[in-house]
Structure formats: C-alpha cells, structure tokens
Amino acid sequence: MSARLLWEGADSALWARKLDGRTKVCLLAAATVLVITIDRPATLFALFTLALCLHVAAGTPASKWEVLGALLLICLWGAVASQGLFYAQTPRTPLVCFVSPAFPVLGPLTGGVFLYREGLAYGALQGMRSATMLCLGLFVCWTSDPRALLNAFVSWRMPPMAAFMAVTALRFLPVLAAEGEEIMMAARLRKRAAGVPFRAWHWLAFLPKLVYPLLARSLRRAQTLSLSVLSRGFVNYRPAVQQQWPWPEKLFSCLLLAAALLAVLMKLFYALAEQSLFYWSSGRPIYDFARLWL
Image 1 (tube, rainbow, N blue to C red):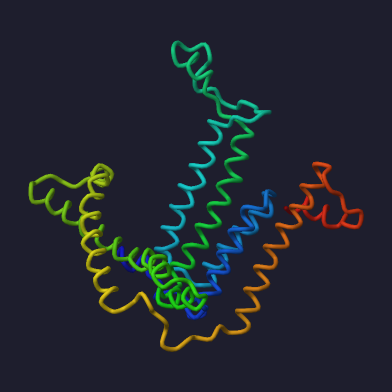
Image 2: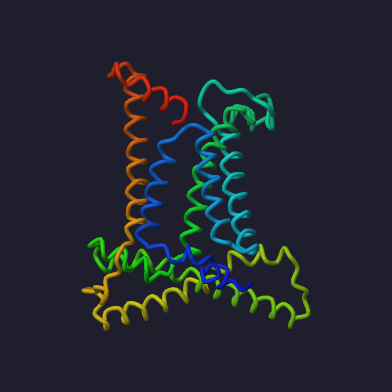
C-alpha cells in the first residue's frame, strides 16, 4: 500500500464512513474529557479496548494495523521509560540502578539514575491516555471525508476559515505522506545511481534531511491554497445543502457528552469529600462509584 492510501479512509467499512462528522467530533470530545478525568487503570484500559474495537468494526486493513501498532508501541514505551527513569514523587522503589550515586562525576551530578516501580506504573497510566486518543484520532482520520468534517464545523457556526484550517491538516496528511515517499524514493535512486546500496540505516540517516524539501513543498502548496480560498470567496462559506444530523447519532452524541460531564461531576464530588470540603450524606453510591471506577 502506498503512503497516500495508508492515510486515507476509502477502504474502511461503509458504516464508519457514513457516520456524521459531528458524531465523530463529539466522540473525540467525550473521550478527551474521560481520559483526563479517569485515573483508574482498569477503566482506562477498557476505554482503550473500546477504541481498538472501533478499528476492528471499521475493518481497518492489516497495513494500517501495522502503523497503529508501531505508533502505540512508541507512545507507550516512551511514557513508561521516561516516567520510570525520571519519576520524582515519593514514595518510589528502585528496581534497577543504572548509575550509582557513588559513580564519579555523574553520580553526584544526578544523584543516581534508577528505574522506579511507581514510575513504571505512572508512565503506563499516562501512556494509556495518549494511546486511547491516538486510536480514536486515527479512527476518525481513516474513516472520514474532510468535506464532511468541514460541513460539520460550519453547521455549528464555527468561523469558516477556522474550520478550514482545522480540516486542512487532515486533508493534506495523505499528501504529505505521498510527498515524503517520493523524496525517499529519489534519495534511494541517487544512492543506486552512485553505486552505493541503500541499506536500512540509510533511511534513519536521511530522515532529518526530509524536513527541508517537505517544508518547501508545504510553503508553496500553502500559498497556492490561500489564493484559491480567497478567490473562491471561502470567507463566507456556507454549504449549499445542509446535511441533517441523523437523530440516532445525535442522541448517541448527547449521551456520550452527558456521560463525560457526569464523570467529571462525580470525580469532583469525590475529590471534595476526600479533602473534607464538602460531603453529601445521600451521595454514598456516587463516592463509591468514583472510588472504584474513576
């Protein structure tokens, strides 16, 4: 699969492509609130599993699963490793010592470098939040027509230029991927013409050099796009036919947002009671639910 097709959603299931853009935006908004509010690892893992189930139901192909798996691995590994090494809260239990405090120069300078058990747990929790939003963001990216999202933003009275800027990033992600693939292919052909085999590590060495041609192409494309937008009067854009938001999707979106708001309120009540600032005598079920699941 080419780099451009890898970031487009034409191969997803029909039901996922037919979802209204407003439904997908509400899904992302509710998920954002929930992953910030929830601290319980089991509940966060359940949200992450639901996000993966959406990809399964949408028929995400194997090539995109490979990309998703690589991004999830980088996200989770980075969070766990960084927090495990640099966890600063107490208590903390060292598991592995990389640099002893008695080691010359580095020991007194850093106080020792350890891998902490509490840091690993905290990093896994933070990584689960990022992984959940990464899964949902890629789900929206791989199943959405940018025009549907644009019309959704405009129907909510969002300024047309702001809506256009928000959707442009999604629209040109496949284009940037295709251009990056072309630049890498050109570098590979130049190596081959010079009689030098293009090895696997050459890709890593060439990645920093990929930024400059991509930036130059993006600037030229942005200039052309801005002139096109102004010449077509996009500042006052309104869709010719306003697409109706199907009532089952609208009801589902309202329930999602209400659930996210309810979770925030329950967590707030629990935090106030924990700090002895406010206690509701009849709210024991709320406190128990927040303690066990939030």
